[in-house]
Image (cartoon, rainbow, N blue to C red; front, side, top):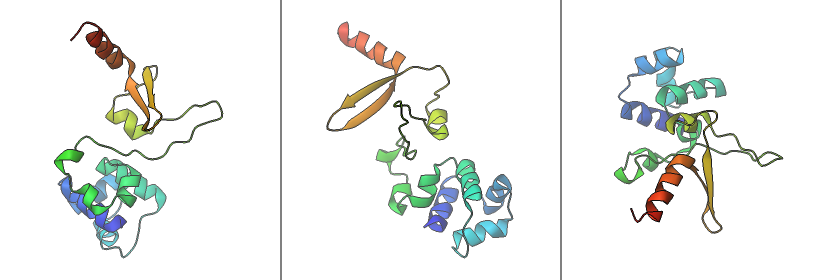
Length: 138
């Protein structure tokens, strides 16, 4: 599946095989072989591919083809992968998620939860401005 996803994402980004090969540090023929599924990148090169294409490694490897079609309803939606909760409840937010949402060290996030739907992290300043607007009747 990585070959089909790789080709589809590369074309969506309007990148040539040559440009992607240069960004990843491999020959153009290597990209062609990966897309044709004659071979597959190792984990390090798959990570470089994902970074060059600005997608998560999970999307590059596992995303069903119909999820990569760029449906209007999916714009701005992301799956950044799995995180592990540490002994003290800490999680590490994936690098790509931090980049997309401009989360920097020292930023504060509000943790919201719904027992049926799950947990959400929201920028604390945004949350407080919405709460203030609701308090004041918008």
